[in-house]
Length: 282
Image (cartoon, rainbow, N blue to C red; front, side, top):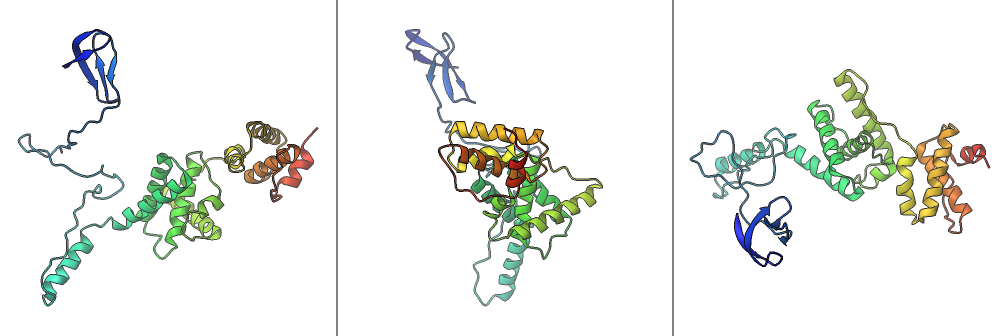
């Protein structure tokens, strides 16, 4: 503990530092004397196989358990010898090539992270997509296939499994040129491969129209009253057992509410619109 002057106690008192919150707190009255302070000391990591006499060594970011070496591999630079030294130059190239066997995985994880960030997805979905890709990559069955489609399909499946589904069109918008058909084929391929490996069906999660509704309404800048009405329409559709795509039902509900309100939206009529309207009551 250290001492500092507390304006409430009107005297120097002992204070404690809450490292989690970064607050300096008076032990007498509980007044926060300093909030959100930054710890400027060094961050160190000590490994189990190190003796207590060794000084800790500063390292980079946290290790990734999906990588074979935990992401702690060292890249040996190419020697700066003369261009005529063919043997030394060739040895340097092979050192660089073999020093990081997880290079392809790292690049794949970066691509998934970029796509997830562009879609505003949470870290748990990104991590699940990384796990799915690692499992498929370990099966050595994706060689020669469209890598962008495979990565996009992993992200699509991860969204489904985390109960935060995205449409294939949304995934396609960040898939570096992969088409909806390619992503769909990649998704079917991944599911088949993993199901054969696990020996059981793969849990994908059930898609509901409500999973898309609020996001669609947000994109259209609909007011709260319209959103509530569209949500109620979707709930009514579940009671009527409308056997159409959840995306179509959500779009149809939005279209109906927008046409009944003053703020009309020019939406393309989707597949489920006609069936949905023909079964709604009152």
